[in-house]
Length: 216
Length: 241
Image (tube, rainbow over all chains, first blue to last red; front, side, top):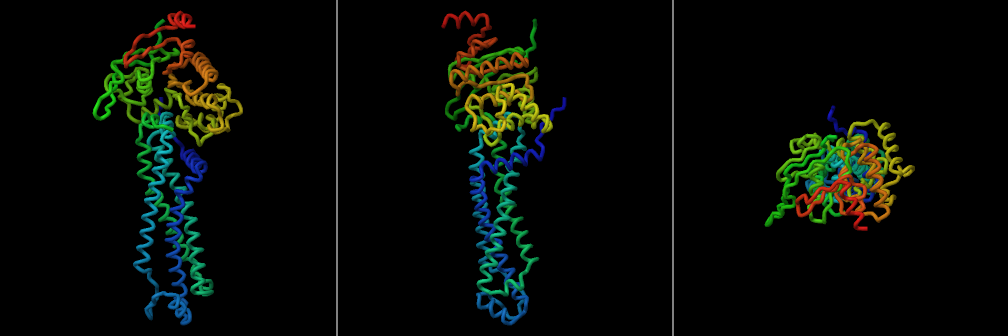
């Protein structure tokens, strides 16, 4: 007899999606820190993209406006670099975000001890459990970082248009903004996946008896 | 008639290491369980019946001794084979029902079938059949929180039977139910076991269970105190009433 234990990918997706939907509030909290961090990252990059586009028009008035808005522009320079301080703040916010994700996912594992134990009693392999958690994190990561990226771009456009005026719209750098959004989504999703690895391994390694012994 | 032995427990001991002291919970248990029997493991709390139950179900490993299911030593199985055993050979029923809260009754029943590689349509069809058999017709779309305790346990019974296992292990299946509902569950188990020729092993201290058991194993202080067959029992329970 073929000794086969399987969990089709489609079914895993369904289960993971259902888990998120049912625990919507908990998922929202987990995702919120990601949304904020990604929005911040995206805001920084997008503001820079916009300023750069204004600079690229080469208009003297435009450069005046940039200088007035507080950008350091060396005469003759063709690009505006993000300052070291900005990069630090973004890195820090991403770090805080990943710690938050690990924390929230550990909580979620503890909450679901019994559920995981039951699944293992029904014949689930360790890797099914890991797969479910990773899929959940992937969905949360994608949704969270997309939301964050959109918020970041909108925020950056609004605040830049306040500083630099209508110039921002006439020279709106679509390709650069798109790249920024892609980078932010990739970074956000990776953070979400990175944050779930340790909790997922804890969940998968758990013996069913231990899980059953937990108080509900 | 020589019946096939489905579970064999030989010289099983289990110690729990609590750091400073080591507690001997099982002190050498030998058992042979025949196929198709309805069997109760009785004993006061702390006697080690749940521990024995976990050993038989492959949920825990004995400190020494061996557990054979269908003449296979389960200590020799790797994680993959153990998962297969839990999925196909054994159905579990718990005191606390342990349904998966985010899934509907039907999804709870079909999950083990999915693990066993059954196609979605077949699983739904069979799952509906099982739910009907346990008397939950039309309740398949309800979440566990929308069902009463007795109904949840019925779902758990259906789930335990999902892959037509050889053995159903029930750990205090009536422990969280009132008298009447508990009786219903016991009757249901008995009915299904005789209908499907499944070996039912339940750890319990519910005396209602005695009436339907083919065999009762009394555990006291980590040892088998006595094993009684049905005919010996009825005199005793008759005497009690």
